[in-house]
Length: 426
Image: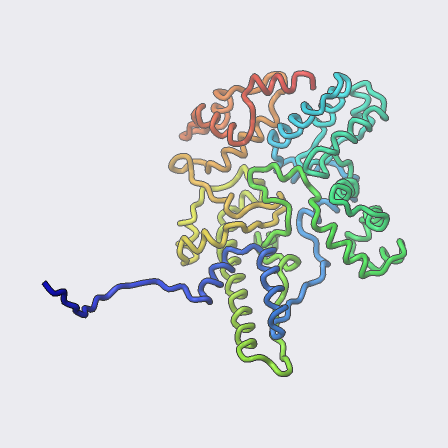
């Protein structure tokens, strides 16, 4: 039998992602740091694209608060008390102390110093008071403190903002005489008086600006990294601050450069159009990011006011419907995106959480409340999971003991009998 050849037609649909669409999707998923690197590389190849970095005259909220506290002598403040990461930081520190192999006397001093830690990671009490409390000499206490200042992340157990930054600079291998001199005059740096600062230590304003970029890469509150909502230390993509009419979200212009189109002699074909398209895509990405972030933070205004224990239930489907975007677009834009708030730097994705029951608290808020409860409990009589469940429950909203045990494990909080053992000598 002979085979026959025939021609037939059929219809099918395929989605083809052209280069421009792929780039737009990549821009939606990119954080400010990654996008900046991409744009700088593009500008190096295309003279029509000019990348301009803004000056560093504005400080982010966490820096502004740190400078304010520096002027007040570094005492504890209301925001840190409300937004504390609680037992997660304490568990990390106590584990590190346990691994040091200290003598009983040193252990007692170390635990007293750990109890004096604020959620920011700074020591919140004068060293003399801690020495008197433990019946140790001041040199003994200082020697133990020096050992504790080696605990990761760098900057923990600092007594001031300058010491916190110096510890991080030393760990990074960049602490020299010039940087130390600048840290000794943080008051001028906070005021933006670069000219006076440069004159006082005998360097140029350009050198001050260069060291400022180094300083801004550090974290003024390393303890805040232990919050469940905290993003890793880096320049966040967004900044939220309270204005006259409520919370306002904006791009962090110190992390993301400005773009402009330049005229070039003897241009190569297509380069000007490519530069214009790239600028348009970045503008679209920024507009979408602000639109989505604005809707998210509008839902979470109570958390911005009082801390993450007030997080409201919210899903990506809710936000997608509100801003009239696909849920996949919302998912892409919040992936890896961080926002700087007065309570620390948060992942946008961490602000999404469903309610445990109809009309109840969000799971994220419940975990934060649990963290705070354990942080403030009587060390000699820690609360059992059943007792914690009873406190966390409210009329019409019961929290099960197994839910507490699950969230306690997620937060790295040991059970009550372990917490009593860990704190028995403090």
